[in-house]
Image 1: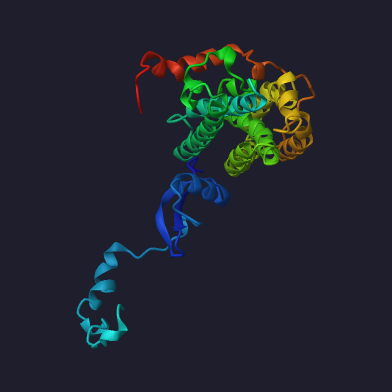
Image 2: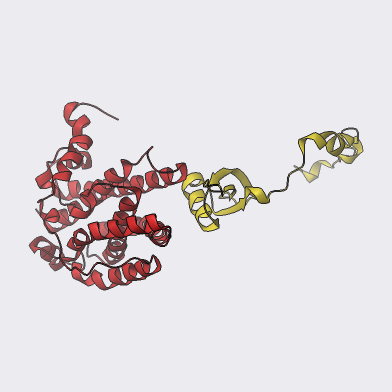
Length: 94
Length: 249
């Protein structure tokens, strides 16, 4: 068994009610200490109001080698962008 | 020296010396995450020192600053608890010292929220939130290491046995404490003992550690009679401002 503590991915919700954002990773022996370490490592400058910690090994990621089939088909589909509408002036910023 | 000045020195000096001791770990802790956590604790304590010694300097009214009090006094003028000047030892000894201090500190700050002086109340209310986290963290780690491997258990028991008789000083009032209590500035130190005992007993039981059967209390730190360790701490901590009195940062 490895003596190294497992790796955790840390997500912090900022002050303004935004989504949790990935801020980095750290080592911790279990979930409880992962939260404590995240508090000490990533919220020292008043960055957060909520912390999520996820075991890095539990993250399911797309394979870089699948980049072509996964993403290239959407390159040529400009009609998927809502850019063909005239927005009335009084709608303002959208 | 007024009771308020004395109270500020006693609170400020314990925070300063422990803050310095914990800062000695910076760059040396077992892993990066604990290194940062230790530095955070040290900085919290130094921040509290600035408030206590700042108020001490203000009520003294002799033109001294918090920095003067921290860097221009000798060991016999320091009023910190003896516990906080004890050497760091291994990581377990540092954590046990922190836990015993936090368990007292948290009760003391909660009680100081009822002080007769509004400035003391303000400092206590700000510090108690930081110290609540210090206690949560140190208690958690004492439990994990006490109830950990054979080696970590043995080291934590040794740390507890070593620190125990130095932790009781906080609860024994001397004449200066009596005057501070008389002024309504703080509670009777002995009145904090039951809550301290409850916290310590609960954590030690969960940590499978044995509370030492010894009520002896080393005393003297609060009135300036220190162990040989404080002089070494001050030699390091005060070197720069004493060697370069005009230095600014």
